[in-house]
Amino acid sequence: MNYMKKINFLAIAVVATAMIFTACKKEDTKTETPAPSAPVQKTIAGIASGDTTFSILVAALNKAGLVATLNGTGNFTVFAPTNAAFRKYEIDEKVISEITDAEDIEELKSVLLYHVLGSEVKAAQLTNAYVPTLFTVNGNGVSLKIGIAPVKLNAEVNVTTADVDASNGVIHIIDDLLFPPTIVDIASNDPLFSTLVAAVGKAGLVETLDETENLTVFAPINQAFTDINFDLEATSKEALTPILTAHVLGSQVRSTQIMNGQKVTALNPAVELTFNTTSGVKLSGGKTIDASVLAADVQATNGVIHVINKVILP
Image (cartoon, rainbow, N blue to C red):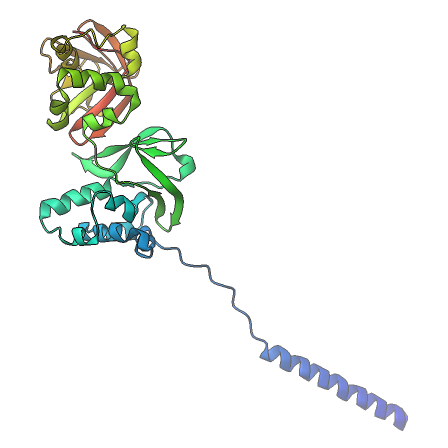
């Protein structure tokens, strides 16, 4: 190799070495950009606490000792009333703060739990149905009536914003408060029972069915009255009472307690009801045979309703 070639070779080698060294140095100093972390989703209680729209609800949850529940693990559905909903009843943070009596706090807790379902139900999953809430009577969730298209709760309360996702469930924002219903409330809020409700009113039995505890009512739908050509105007109060009391038991009997061939006496002592569970649940009594239970275990604060397709005639 002559002198000039050797010089050229050395020059190339030096340049190449410098390039490699520079490349290595750049690689050594290169830093990885961390991937953006996903935002941590808040709990139901966390979402409510962070929104001034729910300041009264949050105060009520704190007073009732329910914040930990809605901060905890689980899949809840909360129908969340806004401050405006509370103020319809002249309830604000000051009113909540002044509740000190243990019974009043327990009543507040009951109302709040009536706004909560024990599973996550998105708006698209809602159906026309009675669903049990976390407010229980004798271990049974008191029923909330859900209607769709549009979504209404107990026939009166509107969902204004649906599907606010939380880490432990979902929130649907509502424009009014929900109050745990009596047997009369449930019947009054369901148009399927309008004839029954009118008959109960005419017979003067509203107070009895509203205030008596642990009743079972077999509630005929409107069509059941139509099928017997029932004329409410032409039927006297005295004639209505034995018919209506034939549909009522003096104790709470849920569907799981009904046995085939079981016999029970109604509040009308002249009527004995006999159950047949070989194909669904049917009952016979007086002049009526095989009235079918269309929907069972609609739980009220003072008893349970089973929906039937026939009127029980003594």
